[in-house]
Image 1: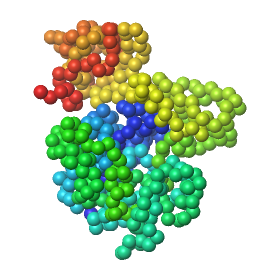
Image 2: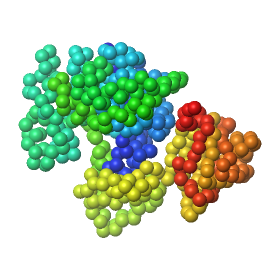
Image 3: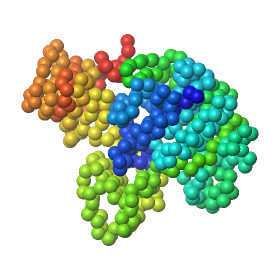
Image 4: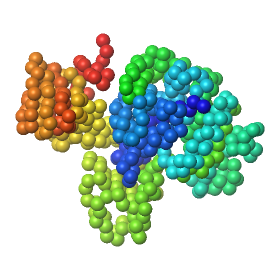
Length: 483
């Protein structure tokens, strides 16, 4: 049986701000053991995949960061594939694109296991068993979803109501009667008391052709532009997998709708396998806090702290000492450029805060102070009127694009490593404690020809210092416009 996991890795995870940002989404959140949610999902997918082939649907902004995350693991990534979305169009278009890519590569009967990138599953063996059951059912042309047996009247999850009698020939899979939106507490208590309701895990199993047929039947304004986007996609292959970059002109015409609304709630062909997987949706800081053991006062701490008369609080900080006095039931999450303080009872409302930041076009909803790029990272050290200072780290063998800025000049000072620099008509090499000046309007490129990280300090001066003041002429990562 050919099972190909498809990991959906999109969305900003606004309820986990300020760690989760648009360019550093929720699946990249590192847990206490040092692994990110994405890495855990990738390892889980690899264990059930046929021939270690895994497909990840994401966007170009996070493509190289996600690729690096997977490469950090002790796992075979030679058959890792990517489908890159030029714009966010929700899960229906993402799954439709993945289905067409898999159908073309492996045939219509290839079984797809669709998994969000931001969930935890503790019981791996039970998960593998549920996948095999679902895959067998999917081979009969059915859609199978995974339902989690509820342990409490949770109001933050959707529910699945299923028929009591299992499908003919199956002792473990039931037909879905209906999907229920996140309920009020009183309704949730009734649902879990019935014995015929499960939490909706957002994981699905089906053949590529089954999903394409269902999308054609229920969501033509999703699948038709999506298929055109796949047809006109830019494809590339390398030693570490392949990439399908969807055509923007067609894909942006796809309806922005979830797979739940587009297909699952409309189709008569949806079934569910009830599971007990040790599943956690990690949907808020409250859920994250529960992954850390409490101390004797109920505090869950992932930080250097000084606490006095503090109870039932969650604190996370990677750098600064956090001091707290005389408080209860708080969430405190500190990052270098933003601090969140929230009442635990309002953990779900963090997304409202992010919405306000987005309306005011604040960078804190998009970027961290340290920003990941295909070639490495840059960290904003200080900025003010007409100047900005950055620490730039370029990976061995990597290079920035050949580019130009209209509104700013740049001074580069090498701290460690060696730099090869194109500056106008000159090509120069710099060692530590050497520098160069790049006037506005000059074409320039920075390359690390060495085997160690290149670290330099960049000082920008000019009337406008925004990241969009970049004109790219050439780029090894495909970010320059094609002529």
